[in-house]
Length: 198
Ligand SMILES: C[S@@+](CC[C@H](N)C(=O)[O-])C[C@H]1O[C@@H](n2cnc3c(N)ncnc32)[C@H](O)[C@@H]1O
Image (tube, rainbow, N blue to C red; front, side, top):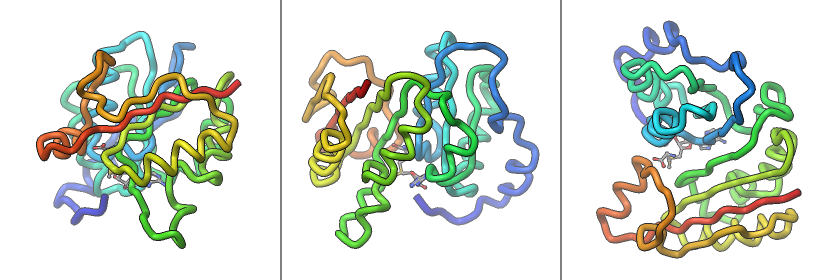
């Protein structure tokens, strides 16, 4: 997601109290890669105080909107990182329990396949982040990205725990993301997959 710099972006970015520098407890850490404006990760943090959460976003313009939202609620169990996911091993090696990939950019052209957040390159990166077993939960509107990701997970040794081609028709605990709200309002079915690897 690219957007114009909000007028107060620099002020918000420079005064943010939520940059990740560890948590003061040993609760499991859940990570969302590509949090966008932060609706999902903030609502997760508020709903599940017994877990820690980190939201990662590569564009500071977008992250500044998330920070403003987080400032309103001041959750103790939520931190953020403004970086590309490829850099996360430097910061989060062996720390993460679950990764969420919500409505990741589909990068439809074959020559851009490596940029997909479920490409082998990114799955190898995530391997370094997990504390014990690897656990990824993905949601998308995009059929092609979904099929590509299922193959990619399986090729990387993941097993499917749960899969749905219409998440909103299922009894699965779900917090909607910004993109999810938009797509489902337009009648697009939300695809969901939960995968694990030892
Ligand atoms: C389509 S938006 C979805 C936002 C949000 N997850 C939602 O569902 O509403 C994808 C977001 O992922 C971010 N993103 C894409 N590739 C990334 C990467 N390699 N590292 C970190 N963030 C990334 C984009 O900047 C964008 O904000």
